[in-house]
Amino acid sequence: ELGYWVFARVLEENNVTVKPLSGFLTNDVPDDCRLLIVAGPRIALHDEELGRIEKYLNQGGRLFALFNYSARHVNTGLERVLANWGVEVGRNTVRDPTQAQAGREQNVVANHFGPHPIVGSLRNLRVALALPRSIQARRGVPSSADAPKVVELVTTSENGLAIVESRTAGAKVELTGAISMIAAVEKGAIPGVSAGATRIVVAGDSFFLENGAIAQGANRDFLRNAANWLLNRELLLEGIGPRVVKEYRVTITDAELTRLRWVLLGGLPGSVLFLGWLVWLRRKS
Image (cartoon, rainbow, N blue to C red; front, side, top):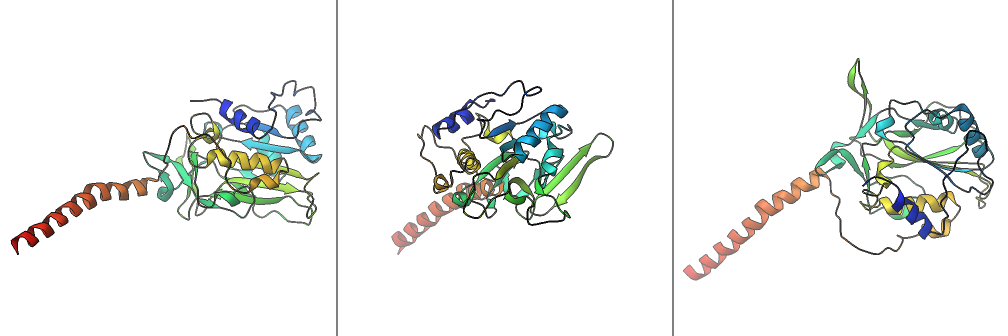
């Protein structure tokens, strides 16, 4: 099920008022906007819009940007803005054979997390991403004391692949190894004081927080933590937030499904045969 009404409800449960933003071509980001969310842009943004986003960030704004594979060939302009903040948005799709979701090998069930408060409480959980794009700290950029600090939050295992597709050259592997798919940025923070600092979270997948996918794995908890960190609510990042349990859903990798299949098809019948053999031996003796 597409849409973001569950996304909005999660924010409202955390006392965040959600409002659509319009008139962006002629007006700046409103002064009372504490968090700007750009979810899955599929067309190029106007230069005026990009300029207002840049101005908002330079003034200590907070941004949650989500990209997806459907727009990997589209230059939205937001990629250029984020590059100025130390983030490289890949025009690719990331896969991980060892962390592929069972039945959906193009999806990544990630449980490799970076050192950051957003994912600190998710260490024993998983985030399920659908054909994510790479979101990495820019390499080879000179660093300084006041440069944005980029932390890669969610990565593949060492078996990750970033694949680039083109109509002329076909598909080729662009990156290998542990590939980041979500990153956080902070600039201007004073130790112990987070107010006034610019904070950004960038995800290479927008579908994992849509209505039909947000309940998978720790997706909902990631959203809650990301919003609380962006809004300076660090005290709410400890533990997993409460929720009403309506159904149980298990997200496993393809490798785990294979092991489970062997247990069910081989281990259980084998155990029954072994017990039957023991009973036969005892009766025979």
